[in-house]
Amino acid sequence: MTAYHVRAADLTRAADRAALVALLDAYARDPMGGGQPLAAAVAATLADKLAAQPTARAWLAFAPDGEPAGVAVGFIGFSTFAATPLLNLHDLAVAAAHRRRGVGHQLLAAVEDAARALGCCKVTLEVRDDNATAQRLYRALGFGDGAAPHRFLAKPL
Image 1: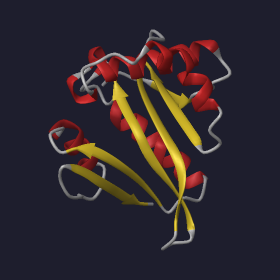
Image 2 (image 1 turned 180 degrees about the vertical axis):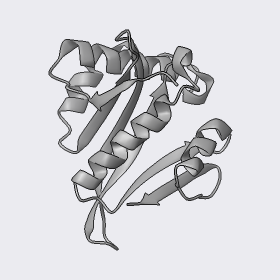
Image 3 (image 1 turned 120 degrees about the vertical axis):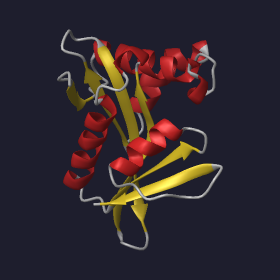
Image 4 (image 1 turned 90 degrees about the vertical axis):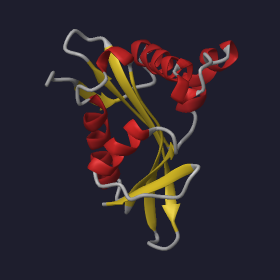
């Protein structure tokens, strides 16, 4: 398995901002992301607006040659039943050239590590009912199953 480097995105760095937007645009163009590019206005303002969200967290995965390979974006929320924070994973995307190489696993491990460091009780996410590949990944990593048409999954920490 290729060794990828995963780290928290620094949205004050132009290279991280560009990588985040490029990876999310590639995901949006994929059939599982809707099959359409990000609108020009969204692409132009995404990094600024995301950086302005106090609960936003993002991670980037890089191939050994430095090429951006994957992205995860989440938001800190709150569990009223546990009276502790939780982390909701909003986006997880791996560039087509880097799929099936463990990038998704590595990104999710970084998300879980960050959630634990923040004192979160769980990580939640939503996945399309027809995205069997992502569902297999999430189940393999211990996420519980939800109901169709979108599965809301949670993994206690």
